[in-house]
Image (cartoon, rainbow, N blue to C red; front, side, top):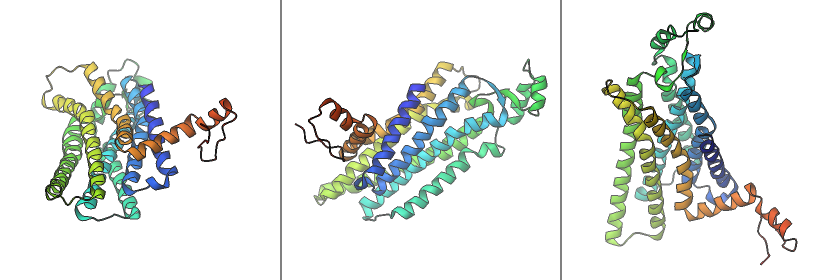
Length: 314
């Protein structure tokens, strides 16, 4: 899990650095992808360490445990809203030839972030299992003095001990995940229907062919998101709708691990499907991570290295 967190942080930092260093890549779509990378960066830097703490079944104050569990929901909801925003931007470009200004898109991203905070942190406002947490605290063998320090809010910390199952299933999954994903699929279905009509009439321009490739890449990101996150939500649905069903701890850990892998897959897919972005990402990795120009200059003193990192050696 720790190696996965490091890989997520490194790859998403590379995506953000690539967009910042290469001016020609600063399109609205690439800027949104960079924002998506920032959300994934939060997963690697904070959400995964928080998940590791939750998996240890430690004894923590209720609201400390609740905050650790809420943060992954914030980053996940922000990713969903960004994918929806990227789809809307692609739809406006291809179907209506409308180009959204970066300033307006930045305001929309901030609104998406605020909405994600409201959705992810709503359990901090009362939709939680505080009473059950306190009841479980009474069974702790060493609860006495420590429990008084925390006003009786000390207990076994885990993801399911602080969240109400109705919140995870009906609100997070049905309302805040399936509804945006349904809108995403509807947008891409309409987009590909329009493009198919252009293909049949042979009026599709070269520029729109490139946008079609972009739409396919973004649709692939949506598909990977579904593959990585739906299994975990299905487990929560079974726990709510079938309380007597047997649960498997190994299956739960695998589903959580799969949800974290999504944050590593996003930048890799985008780099592989977008050739120009992949080449820029490779150059940033070689020049700023591996320090390839300096290393080559040390190994081959006769090779001249220009400030941009390009060499004139054979």
